Image (tube, rainbow, N blue to C red):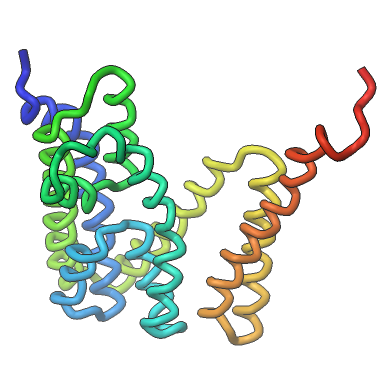
Length: 235
């Protein structure tokens, strides 16, 4: 029978490979944005959130550190749901192990853990090893990318930066499911672009997030309440 540590290594290999690639891209783009190496490494070590780290790269120059950090916090609120979902399964582990696992509970780790929980209880050794090796891969990739970025020509680093933008657009398209998601995405984009053209690019990012989610929520209400408040549909 495989040990929990060996199973964590085997199951986590796809996450490690992905994290090495994405964090290396972050390192290259951070170097192109003239971030000091220590700032780049600390961002990956302390923030450890791929989408938020790329948001900070774009938002800090136009919004300042405080508003950019607030935007990153809003983008990561989903992690509260992740913690709530696994809380009953880790309640007996002890505070130190819970903290070590919770810090590394990223989107990918949560998806893998959720799949495993559907089959069997979660081992503390497995969970901590899975989160630790993923975190290590993120740090290594960041360091490698930041180091490589120093010697890359400007046109290549700009190409990588555009590739990150294209990545987020592709991710957005991939998660669109129906009218609600479409309205939210288009509303948020329209608000952000309009404010950027008016000279408020930084504020436009936050306004786009809030406006898009509000629009998506607004059109979802009739579908949820129609059965109880509206007239009965003909059968």
